[in-house]
Image (cartoon, rainbow, N blue to C red; front, side, top):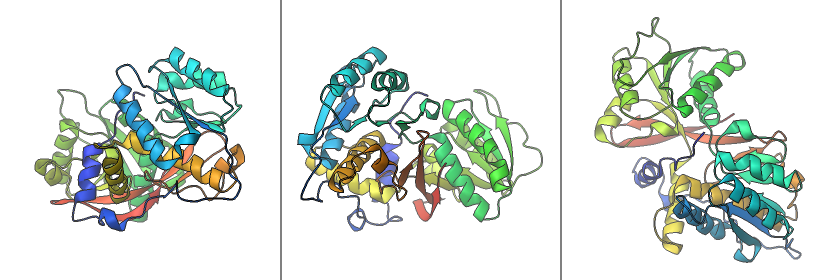
Length: 352
């Protein structure tokens, strides 16, 4: 699944909204502050594109990682944004004896790094393609399955038993449909999907469900939202659906949306802007979180594969996370309600 910088403007707007807690009142993980008498001095390797079309993103990720981990412990390697470049970067990194590898970014780079590392150290990838997970190679990007799981779990607590998922055939929507279908038995819900193709109108959903999930974004999704609101059905969304345009807020009013906590992201963004300059994206926040996890393990003397799998997990800007032995990552999300003036956080919910 191609990576995109997830809703950075929308998350920043959320943090600045009067509907969420002030960024100054939210404590994000102060990863670099704790100290111990005897510190593990092994480096962590950061594999990101420093040249090529995604160099700007890679540089932002490096800057974010250095906010969370002591620079003397972070060794950055240029993947060039290619599989061959990523493999070469991993080879160079392994020669320095890293405790873990953070990266790569792109889905096409992950198998090359995983095969090069061959389980010698944990690899925390920034891709959101969950198919690539394997023991020791963790998919740390925010996935469609995670946010779909979070919003459906919340909806079920509010009495929702039947859901229609709108599939616009984007990779994100298709993954969301699959994730929703897999949760039918666990949550005791029924799930149907309706295709919305470019240039076409939405088919009649038939019997009106309790809720309709709009996993994607854009004008097609908003058109579906407007049509469905007339039925009085509850709208559900994922982080991709966040949209602050007045017309969009009107269409989504009352929708329940799963997203990283916008206030925590806003605090991170403020720190990044003050110390680095510019606005970070959500992928930069992932780099901050991954480096911060390495830092917290270092300070607790547990910088190891077993430490990464700690049952208590880690508090992160992108949501509390727990690593699993199969390479998957569980992440908790804020549940937001769309209002005419913005998005209001009302609950937290666990993702897949």
